[in-house]
Length: 184
View 1 (cartoon, rainbow, N blue to C red):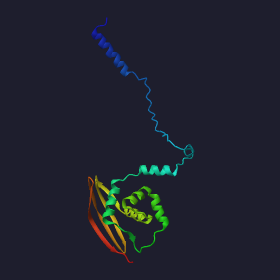
View 2 (cartoon, helix red, strand yellow; view 1 turned 90 degrees about the vertical axis):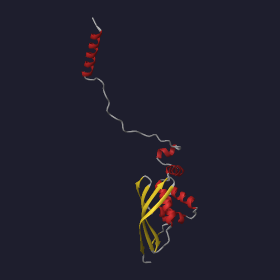
View 3 (cartoon, rainbow, N blue to C red; view 1 turned 180 degrees about the vertical axis):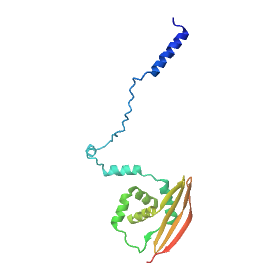
View 4 (spheres, helix red, strand yellow; view 1 turned 135 degrees about the horizontal axis):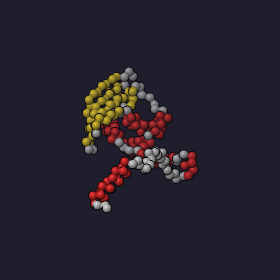
């Protein structure tokens, strides 16, 4: 006869046997890490060849272009110090260099054109050179160390300092400045 104590005892014994018994459960530990992403191509002919249209490339790069905090700091420093890009005797800039710089940075070139109301490609080239000449190192959130050389052909000035961003306000402090006369 099964009493309530016997039922509890029997069910506990049954549970212990189930726990001690080897499991017949097959656990699949193979993880499929090969995932494929299906891409949509508006032109099936381009999908087969892996090509994209020039318009698609431009639209995609515009979507990917982000004005970062670092870029904002560089614009601030360029606006404040207007560093030159002449390091010695000035010479003409080859058209290939101008076209190459603008071609490699189309979104930045467009931003520079609109921000400074520039129409000439040479002016856009020079402004991008100024931005590229500024070296930044992030110290902490909203704080950067910078250095750049102000090349005014025969006189070179080197600047080092820190930039701090608080909200929408950017401020800088020069920690080291040096000047050098270039033989012209």
